[in-house]
Image (cartoon, rainbow, N blue to C red; front, side, top):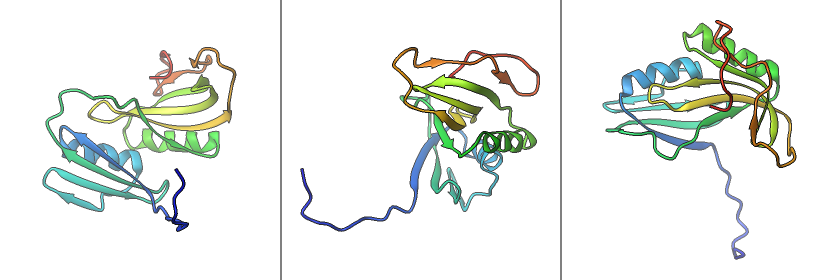
Length: 158
């Protein structure tokens, strides 16, 4: 269906609203993960106005029994160095990243690192190294998967 209007809408940023069990513990996690303070905090609510990447992230305290249909969340960056810099920042902030380097996931070769928020939501920072791989196994890790700084290995793709 073609629109009669030719007006272009300029999107400012994406908005993501997450239901969380405890807004205070989630604020602490997202401070560390994003490296910024919330722009607004109210009883049972917090907002992070993220500039890079542009994101309006809100946390809404609710009774949450399960995670629901959400698979995971992510931030795509330009280079592996960006992945590693983000991973270092997360580690320095006390989070426990899990690396997946040279992994084939979603029919692309990627370098990535993961953290979990207090409600079990998985966040990744990733770079796409090769895209549009043939349709084979949609997720197969390379041999460089590591949890934190302990050297433990893990299965891939959360």
